[in-house]
Amino acid sequence: MQTKYLRINPEDNVAVAIVTLAAGESVNVDGNEVTLLHEIPAGHKFALQDFAAKDFVVKYGYAIGHAREAIAKGALVNEKNIKTNLDGVLEYTYAPKLEFPEIANRNLTFKGYRRKNGEVGVRNEIWVIPSVGCVNGTVNQLVEELKKETNCAGVDAIVGYPHNYGCSQLGDDHENTRKILRDMVMHPNCGAVLIVGLGCENNQVSAFKEFLGDYDIERVKFMETQKVADEFETGMELMRELYAVASKDVRTDVPLSELKVGLKCGGSDGFSGITANPLLGVFSDFLVAQGGTSVLTEVPEMFGAETILMNRCETTGLFDKTVHLINDFKEYFIKNEQPIYENPSPGNKAGGISTLEEKSLGCTQKCGKSVVKDVLMYGDRIHTKGLNLLSAPGNDLVAATALASSGCQIVLFTTGRGTPFGSYVPTMKISTNSNLYNNKPGWIDFNAGVILENKTMEETHEAFVEYIIKVASGELVNNEKKNYREIAIWKMGVTL
Image 1 (cartoon, rainbow, N blue to C red):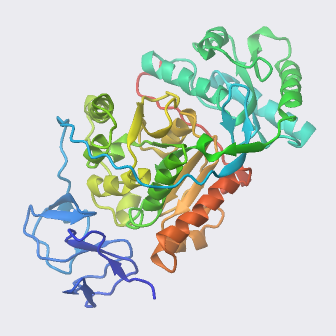
Image 2 (image 1 turned 60 degrees about the vertical axis):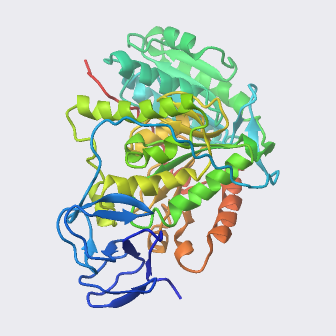
């Protein structure tokens, strides 16, 4: 029989409706008889006690805000009657709480592509990347022509990644564009890449070549369209050369320790912190125990749960980096005269999330309990195995692009409301509830909602590991099947 409501932590003074509960219904929560004063939609909270104004509301064992006004026992608790406790830039003290989950190394493998530099891809794709948005049309034409000629035989996909940057940018914005494009060129899921430039842009091809450093000249080609007579003819010659190389690549057995996954959530609901996000946390700890890597981002969605992450940092140096990660992002909000805690979104609220603390405490569960091994700035690439934190905003497309650019071969994306988008690596959607999974089979790849029904976390995790290995070995996820692939580069400053 399905559970109708759940008190997540013994310290909680609210419970979550698993199914919609009727006004007037009586429920017994751990011996506490509660008569519901309102209808409680699935995923939403109800009060287990009477609250006076300013009393803390506790969920996940932590305060998620305080009562704006008196709230009666049995009442619906949402953004209308509770308010965040968070405010401004803070000082923090390192109080390490390091856990080392005892998880056996099972010596699992997947079928991947071992690159010349030793890195491993889970896809073998040919990419065409513009150095500047002015040549997006040319990029798209080249991609479509090579698809017609080859039918993608011998490669997993042929994809262009148009964007609107590469010129009229200054300072950090220009560098961020260069970093993300560099990271794409060097990504192991890319078997071969053509960089198409215009010739007069800020992101000059010659400077970008130097910025790349060492690269495989057989698999990375360049074309400046202002310097060739016919950019389509020249471009196709280069594309055919790249295809001849990449189409010979084959998958081989590689250890799971070579897998790097990005952890992301979007369109969250009241079940996100109960099903899908904890599932990713269990998997993240498992992957780290196998010698692999997971990366958590969405810095604004760490606000309110940041001390949990800070105290899991392996060293004081990483603690200091995490403090900067949080406070620098708050300063970014302040500099732009925006409220720091303007979150969650309307969709989050409709799904049962009322404050940023509540969202963050659910969001950070995606990284499990492992020790933080490194902290990356936006555009940085992974160089330490284990759990990493990455600076990027919460925006789905920008954050997923940043995760892929750090070197993650797959992005694991939990959602309670659904989204079809995909980044430039396989973007696996994990639903928090079965209704979404059943209603959007073209979006959702894996259903964590069964954790509230007939499956244990252990059973669900085992099935998830099996599915991850299949995807890493070549099974397509929905965004790939539908060719929903895009990039979004973080813009912070002036456009000329």
